[in-house]
Image 1 (cartoon, one colour):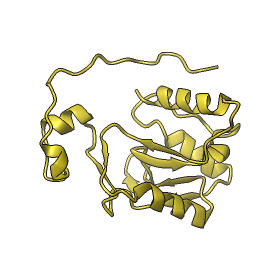
Image 2 (cartoon, one colour):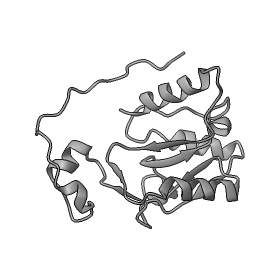
Image 3 (cartoon, helix red, strand yellow):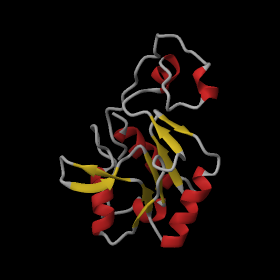
Image 4 (cartoon, one colour):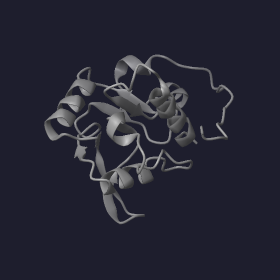
Length: 163
């Protein structure tokens, strides 16, 4: 799953001597950015609300709550990548523990309508290879014309979490 890769990427950023970037935008591979001002508007929301995480809220019937899904999260690593907040988890829901523990530690999570207002298109459980080979009505026309081979590159898995 992609949780260990996200954890490894954030740990790498935290280990650099140049310091953390101000923001990290976590996007699933099946997300298409459809409005050029998407990142700018999400950062504006974060700065207006003092948020450590900006995401779009959806109903989670499994946990009986509204919460952010991991397909598009804007994260302030200085507030989120620290002791007391869980890393991304392995499995199909990599951000659940991170988001819950960030909120429990007093960090602000702020709503932004990434998909709802068309800033991104979340294809949902499909890779970009599938997106290009089976275009849908929700995909911008400029992306429908490109086709990829049905053969996918080999999958690579991260089996260890960085120490």
